[in-house]
Image 1 (cartoon, one colour):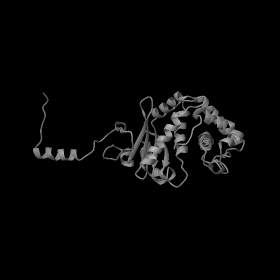
Image 2: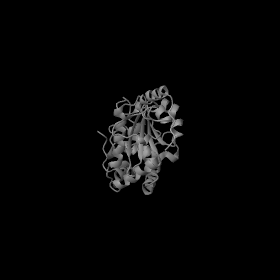
Image 3: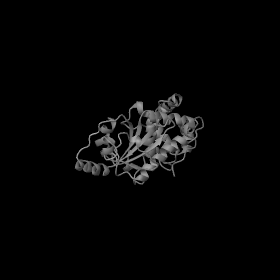
Image 4: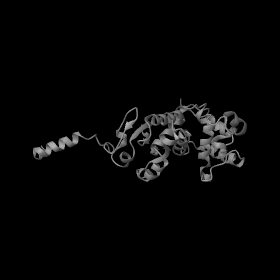
Length: 262
């Protein structure tokens, strides 16, 4: 039998009261589970995640690992659920050449690489906190409440989530697709169909071009003078078919006739 020492009764009472007043403290965010948005803070999640973020939602890949979505206080629960729906939309569509099994490979890669969407109130808040998040080993993509659902500004959710899916899911696994995407991006630049932002290096042309053809395909820029305010010349599916059939085929091959989340 172990020799158990018991302190004075008054100390036991104090310890009991303190422990009963606290939530369970998790060292691993993945010990938390639930279907909806989970409230987190430094009282129930140890370390930088609990100190910086107040909301958490996730997707579980087929390898049973998670793709995490962390939100700050100013991000609404509706926005959190909306971005998870966009992830599911990317993962669950049936492509012309790539079936849903390819999506499982993509999601598994993202989960293995500890991919996370970090959803901050504003860009300034992201800049103040991203170093602490990066120290935990996450591969992240940022998004802001001020540029998502019901913000009154352009909804960048599809773009930013696609960056995460591309960089940590598609690029490391679908080599032929990635090669075709890079070639199509470079061709679009050389033909004047796509003009990358000045702060984007040539190594990232494919990433930004991918977001442009996705938003164009989804119809977000129809009736305008080009996607991303003319950065990408086509503004509709028909424009893509006529001017950039390679870009159109890339979306169809992997995502089929994908539609926006309703």
